Amino acid sequence: MSEQLIEMVDNSGVVRLTISRPQALNALNSAVIETLEQILVELEGWDDLRAVLITGAGEKSFVAGADISEMQHKTPAEAREFAGKALRTIKRLETLPVPVVALVNGFCLGGGCELALACDWAVASDNAIFGQPEVLLGVIPGFGGTQRLPRRVGPAMALDLCTTGRKLDAQEALRIGLVNQVMSQSELQDYADTLTKQLSGNGPQAVRSAKQAIHDGMDQDLDSALALETGLFALCFAGDEQREGMTAFVEKRKPDF
Image (tube, rainbow, N blue to C red; front, side, top):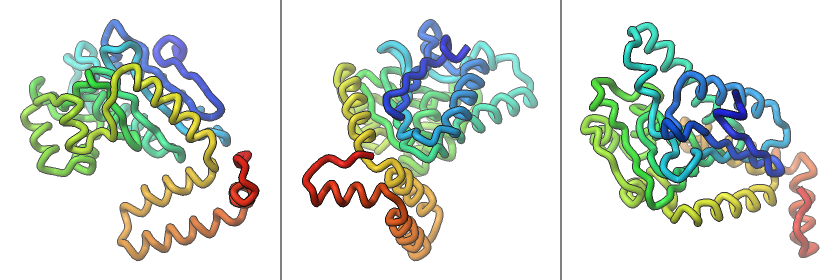
C-alpha cells in the first residue's frame, strides 16, 4: 500500500514523500492517511533523518482535499473518528524533529491546505490554487485548518478564507504568508534538489535544535524562550558536530557531518 499511495525516496536522510492518487487529484482518503501515518511512525525512528519534503504526484495537484465520496454518508461519530485519525497523522508530520517542507504543485484545497499548514514552510508552483472551501459543502475544516491557518496568516484572513470558501492563487498565497516562494513547475524541482543539498550539508543536530527552539519558543514568553535558546545553543558544544563545523571553518574546508 505504501508504494502505491505514497512514494518515498530517501536521499541521504532527506526524504521525499509523494502522495500518489492522481486519478483523484491526490485527495486524502482513509487509506492515504493510514499509509502516511505508517511512514511517519517509521521516520520517527530514524536517527539519520535530516528533512522531509512532501508533494503530490503530477503537475495538477498537491492534494485537492479530503475524499468527499468517502465522507458524504458519514455519521457524526464516524466523521469525528475520521477527523481524529487525520489530525493525529498530520500532528506526527508537524512534530517531526527535522524541517518539513511542502512542495505545492497545483490544487492545495481543504485537507491539502491543512496538510501544507502542518509543514514548517511551503513553496508553490505558479499554478497552485489554495483554499479552505469546506463551507461550500456545509462543513468546516476538520484537519486543523481553523487553528493552524490563523496562526500562519492571522485571524482576519483565516476568517475570510474559512467563511467565504474562496480560492486564492499562488501570488496571493505568497502575499499573505501562506507560502514562502512561488516558482514555475521546473523551478520547483530545482528548488527541491537545492534544498536537499543544503540540508544535507548542515549540522543535523543543529538543524533539529533550531527547529525545536523556534517551535517550542513560540508558546513561551520571550524571556523563557531566550533561556530555551541559550540552553540549546550550549548543548551544541557537547558533541562532535560543533567541533567539526568550527574546525572546518578555520581550516577553510567543507565540514563532514
